[in-house]
Image (tube, rainbow, N blue to C red; front, top):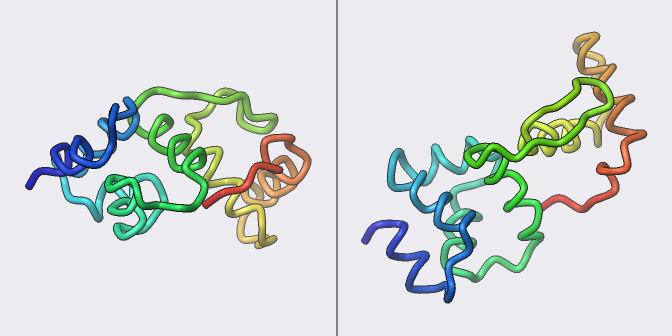
Length: 120
């Protein structure tokens, strides 16, 4: 069964971002689609089936940034895809001075009002 069919069987109506996520799972693999948005294949499976009880808004933000052109204004990098913002917010939870850019992003994300949002 195609991922789009799975999503349609479990969501009524199917949100546009769920449709896009399912289509990208069909175009490549569920694992590759999950990696692209920074989540596990199991989480993506649960989202497509409507059984994920975590923060759907964070998953939606990642999907919209990865494949739907959603952007945010970053104080350090300017306009960036929302999935990139989410990835940097995750990295900012732990300080790792591995590069000047990572240090700058840690500082920017730590002060950013978007960083208060819970991620899945």
